[in-house]
Length: 350
Image (tube, rainbow, N blue to C red; front, side, top):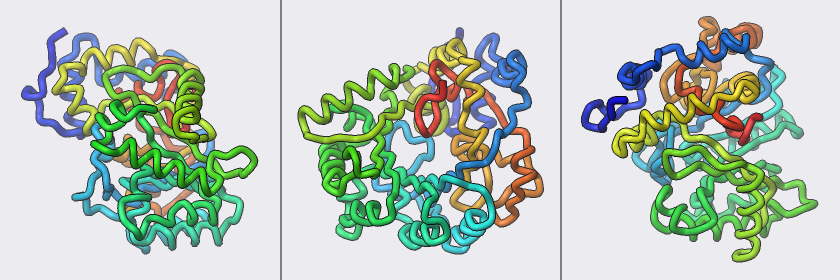
């Protein structure tokens, strides 16, 4: 196949750019993923039910990670307002959502973050609230130092990225000094009971590969992470989630610069797993952008592919019947969610 170089293409993660890249790959059509779904009678892909509301509170972050599909960083200004949060609360109050998954950027950097968490908890004391905490935010500024106590008070489930159990690999993906700060933050969370057996306070770690390859088996990696972190640092956690990097945003830029785009896409396509396809997270999740627009998943959100429910494309217009009956938008980046054991925000799907 012809090698794709970074200078051959503008480095963006728009849908048009990805389609342009794929057009250069022999035998790779724009509807390849849809074709695979047709073979297993899953096209058009439909929701099973709406259980999870994944809400992006903004793209501001104290880190600039190489693999970040949100392209988050300290210079990003996009932030969810209290008015939009209030519209999300109306959905929580009146519909059958069982899990609220708060993400970013660093969701804690939204000035309304704590108010929003408290408002959700006041509506439903039993609803699962997940915060995708990058760990270093806890140490970034004194105003965040009490986050572990806040999380514990409101029984928040924590999901935190940790690329590896060594400093070299972690810092190469997430920035110098991130590993040391992450270890300190994990100890603070452990001190509050997070990841400790019998407390009910859930601390899960998230692993993304640092290169153009798929993650190793989740169970094996989890066992190794648990042993290494406990033996060296006395850190405990509940589960490790492995997530395959999708070829958009900064990871797409990396693939182009390193001339790994074609090979990586071929790897994902060759590893298509029908069982993983049936369990993709977009079938029970709605992704809410920082501005309130609705998407099938946070990857489609970054590609600005709004849900197909024309009458319910914004949180203020929530129509559960329309959203449950919609066709889920699938493109070839979806191969990242169905390769091997599958990939979702909750780890493997098969």
